Image 1 (cartoon, helix red, strand yellow):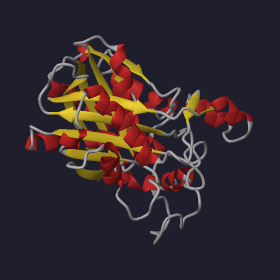
Image 2 (spheres, one colour):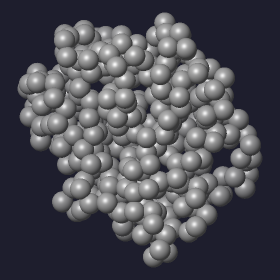
Image 3 (tube, rainbow, N blue to C red):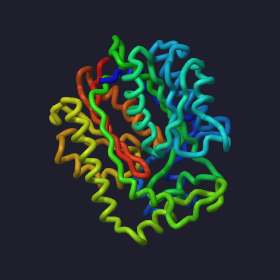
Image 4 (cartoon, rainbow, N blue to C red):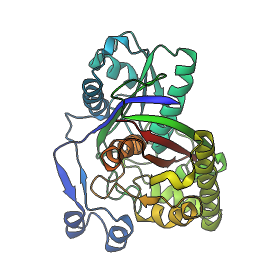
Amino acid sequence: MIAVRAVGTWLPDTRETLADALADGRIGEAEAQRSGYVSVPVAGPELPGPVLAAHAARRVLDAAGADPARIGTLLHAWTTYQGHDLWSPPHFVADRVGARAALPVGVRQLSNGGAAALELAAGRLALDPGSTVLVTTGDRFCPPGFDRWRSDRGLVHADAGTAMLLAADPAPGDAWLVRGVASASAPELEGMHRGDDPFGTARQEQGPTIDLARTKKAFFARHSREAFTATASDRAREVVTTALRRAGVDPARVRYLALPRVGRLAFEIYQPVFAGITPAEVVDLGGRTGHLGAGDLLANLADLHPMLAPGEVAAVFNGGGGYSWTAVVAERTA
């Protein structure tokens, strides 16, 4: 078991609504219906991904009453461009929050990055149980490199930082106790984000704006969508049942099971899968945030906390391109 001292999300104040994007043609009617979003937070140029992550980290450290100088490891995950080409965003975040004794490490698992970082943090704490690990994520999806409304069909990307402080031993005031974690992968699906594109030598050689609809169309010209759905469903079932078993938690105890914030399609795929595992209410908490890049799992833990009483249990399911999937079973402790 791993203790979560605190977890939080930092969102920019500016928002764009689905209604406005539909009215001015940035998204079509069919895609708007598929997304299920209402509005998304949008960051300006002064808030690149690493700065968003640092804001979230400071909020979490303040909530935990933690000294950043005593953090042993900082794991920073992201999905999109962090602002410089050959550079280490984790070191920037560590410096900005005062974690200058920490080992900063980058985690690149696309949308499953925050979840992967949590699991890596557990391994790090097993090696050094007296230390703490700070996990951060930060993404800003902006032109010209990314069109939040069009770069991926049915999925609206939003700007946010998230953070979580983890320790090996529980302490009074902890937010959560992570009782079980499980991950699985299907590397044969990596081509969904590559398509038929040749390997490039520099950023944006395939075009100025990322177009995941194009790469997925190329992938599905050779592979069936039904096979992808079957694989995703199987892996989802595997990670949730394994996390529950490792947690030693009766599935009937789970109050909520939160999905990644990737729109209505995820609910349609995964809700029937999880209905056969647990009577927990399956929830999508992303209607007013959109997809937060690598930060969905941490944001879900933050938003689930006030929805539970101490001692109640939630599960959080997440996934990301490549593909990989993770499930976390956690008990609210305070």
